[in-house]
Length: 131
Image (cartoon, rainbow, N blue to C red):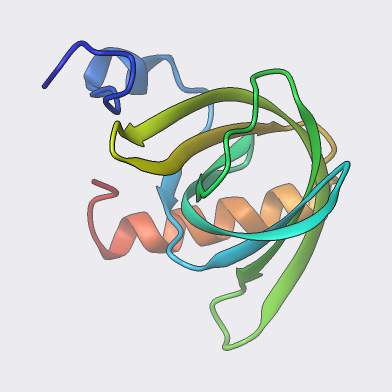
């Protein structure tokens, strides 16, 4: 793995051990709201504390944004989550493409939303590894 700033970082066991909330793959689209309007992004993973997604635009760290995610409820339905968050990481995926991996800390989840995300993570992780 390259140590260049544009290469995605390996988040091995040391990082996972520091995580307060378990995470799981979340391979569906979501919408973010920035000052210039809404844009669709592709989620990579989700936890009760935040989400990571892929974007075709750079979003600077500490940017406040709105995030709309429809979390599967395990019964064929979805719970819509509208949260605000702050960008804690934005890394260019490739030096040749304008695509970024963006991590957001979601600081406005209510108890029902957090429980829904935790249920999704528990079910998804019971089905297999999160990568």
